[in-house]
Image 1 (cartoon, rainbow, N blue to C red):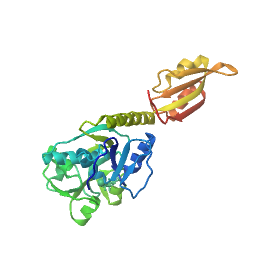
Image 2: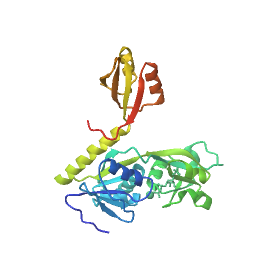
Image 3: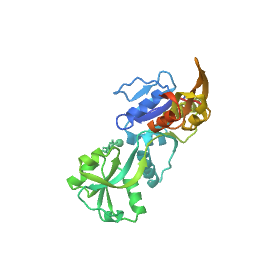
Image 4: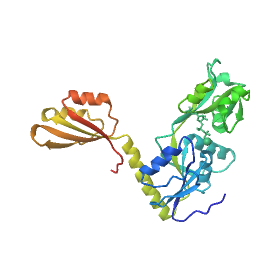
Length: 302
Ligand code: PRP
Ligand code: ZN
């Protein structure tokens, strides 16, 4: 497929279906970018923002961005690292930058082996056949550990390789761990930790696109910042106000307001930059606070 890039619209590649697709679309939505979800479509235009979304296989995203077919991509750092190593070994340049790490899609690349097999250290892998869809990262790890093993590249269903006699061990992504469990495998080494990332092509963008990207990044930062932030409202006896303030996690200057009809208490409103746990609420209560409300914050711009 060949595409000509529109001059004034950003093009973003996201995973069509898989572990990152829903979160990627949700993130766009949270950034105020409206795309009508049409599963069968390959390319969608956002109605209210100069951005087009290309839906592709995750493994294709690094290349699409590095080659400049897309300006941006949301991809797992595992897939990105594998593609970058692949390019390096082929002697071609990187051509991308990571703009932001994202707070979803967390998983790890692990060496796993049949449950019943003993394992003491990575040296046990010497002479073994390792099935993986991540040959570059796997080879680098084995080399770093000084272990000579054979890497068998598979494009999918890596977890059944030991049962089929294709390999002795596997190196595959683990997220919840249920795939390993279902296949009676256990993870013994974590060789790469990953979350999703927003990447961009390295070449400078024209002014229209650069401006659009700036807005996307500002909104994205606002959404990500808000995700770990809560708004607390409570009533505090004036006498214990200072003590109560100490229990407000990560808040600098809470707003203190009078309470109609009660001279002895004030209302305290605070943005807390850390999670508010039940323990925090207990402490606030013990310090004299009442009517404690904790609200999620949707967006933030400081
Ligand atoms: C990975 C991996 C396992 C599964 C592990 O595949 O190959 O099949 O996820 O997840 P779990 O620990 O939650 O069971 P992925 O969904 O990334 O598909 P892909 O490799 O085809 O992109
Ligand atoms: Zn994939």
